[in-house]
Image 1 (spheres, rainbow, N blue to C red):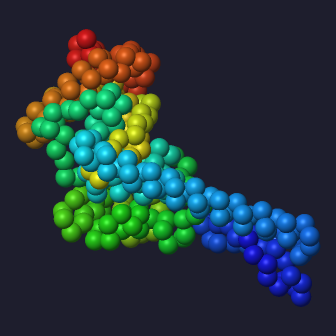
Image 2: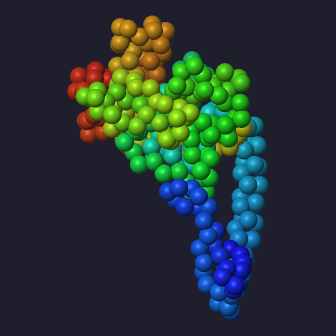
Image 3: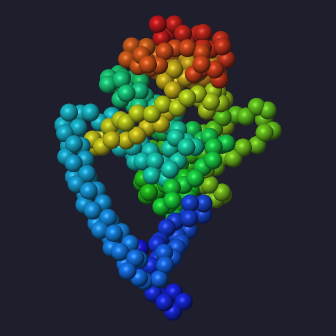
Amino acid sequence: MSFAVRRNRETLLRDYYDPVSGVKRQKSLGPRSSETEATAERFAAGKEQAAARLSDAKDALRRQAGVNRVLRLGRVPDIAARVVRELEDAGLLGRGVRVLGTNALFAYEAAAGVHFASDVMTTEDIDILFHARAKLRFAAEEGVQDRTLMSLLRKADATFEKTGAAFQAWNASGYLVDLIRPVRTPPWREDRSSISADPSDLNAVEIEGLLWHESAPPFESVAIDAKGFPVRLVVPDPRAFAVHKLWLSRKIDRNPLKRRRDEAQARAVAALTGRYLTHLPFEDAPLKSFPKTLVEAAAPLFA
């Protein structure tokens, strides 16, 4: 808030970002008076208090992050955590996009309080599942220039560039980000393929089987990144993850190395869910989007 001259009189103005366009705007709260002066004073005092509390919270967070590093609790790769935080800050995480693939395992193990074996956790990329039918809305504080996935990735790491594939970006270290979406049935039903309307932004590639994930319940957990800081992950339900991975492991046309890893991940997540996440029983309701035969095939893994 600030006082400024408008139409030859001093007026109290409030700055805000339009939630639809992201354009910065101002709203008049009335001419200078004892009431508007009191409003401005309350705002300034509140802003100062909030800044002090934020500073104290950041100090506490940094101290705890140091403890987490000493205890080796950090599991989420730093670059993955930075990408996810940008999606979170932009208001997209869990509201149009989810984290898929191996990085989802960090959410499951954090919720269960255990660690998976390293052979099922190694990854050099992150898959972002785009819900093309979701009503995406960037956070109000985001400027118009930040309303693309590529701009968010560059905020996480300035070296991110698009690869030769329209759905993929990578940074200078070779870390890959893939934007993926389900194959629609029937195929002539068109959906959005990009988070933004910018033609230079990433365009999601259609992948078979993701429609099951899109319809499955979300699962969220707070994990710890490699630097010891918390990161919220929104991923598919672990039961859906295991069923999908088991299906992938039995696809004849899939790379044999990936098939073996898919099965290992399916078994690991199913075992963790059955033993530690007992509030998520293996039942039909959360898996209604999957073919019954796939659900029945995965049931023994949860026993």
